[in-house]
Length: 415
Figure 1 (cartoon, one colour):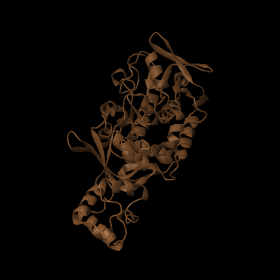
Figure 2 (cartoon, rainbow, N blue to C red; figure 1 turned 90 degrees about the horizontal axis):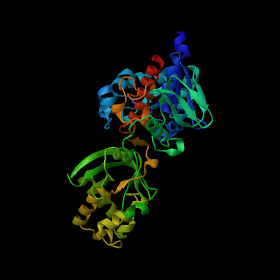
Figure 3 (tube, rainbow, N blue to C red; figure 1 turned 90 degrees about the vertical axis):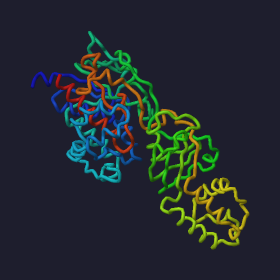
């Protein structure tokens, strides 16, 4: 036990993975210093799930692996060592009751991300780890071993170092790519970085005219124009912006698009998914009958949000001042098609700084998947988003942080 107490570990980054690694290692008897550049821990955790924190996806291991399109098999040891069920039980044990909603997404019952952050901070401190505010600048290496970290204010010597600095997305939360620089100092390869879970850009000028319009209870499909097939479909919320489209469904869709070539993909929005074509036609007949003497441009107030009326009318091609009583069956059918498939051309991703997750990172072939230790430098570990693994939205990316952080913390303390 004395040897365990003398083991010194430095963890860089007090996000989800870092706090899990630090608390785990300290609870096993190691002397742990958790270095965080921000005055507060868990800055990125605070804004996940619109401030509610989708802390995990309450699924089994095969379903989890299936939702990690980038290097999912690398996580097999980590996820089996600390499963979603284990994570659920862990949070309840540290005083955060959870609940599971649609798509197996689990949240704190309070719907407050701050409860997760506060509980993790308590877990770190109650386990005996120390949190210091400083910025890591350089790994200290001797004879292919990690022996500490040089920071802006102090130098911290250690037997093991765990890098948990996150990616390059949301730089205001502290994710500015520091972990990649530290990894490269140690001779590690960092794969190409790209945004994942990110808004999508469109050349369609109508997006700007609809800026700020939030659509609820609509269906979205992303169509590959080459194969004529949908690569992603979902039902829920989305948002028009000055640059294109955003919102929960769009962020999810982006992680299914590895490369977004301009002109290849199309977003198709079903504005009335609860109605089939026949039901929608009857609804239009009713609306036009009630507004028989009015211009068609003044007859959509009950059918559509105000900001999308003009874009729909433009695509329909019927004169704005045509009377509702004069609308033909063919014109109604054409309108139905537009309402069931309002299309938006896609041209690219927003910058990586606006992404929720960074795709790419430290090359997995250079990390031992059973321990999270570097294969190049003894005593150097990685956890969380800094590794080249990323998942779909729905709590899977945070589960990666919890599981890899747990595994890194256990093995750093056990050396």
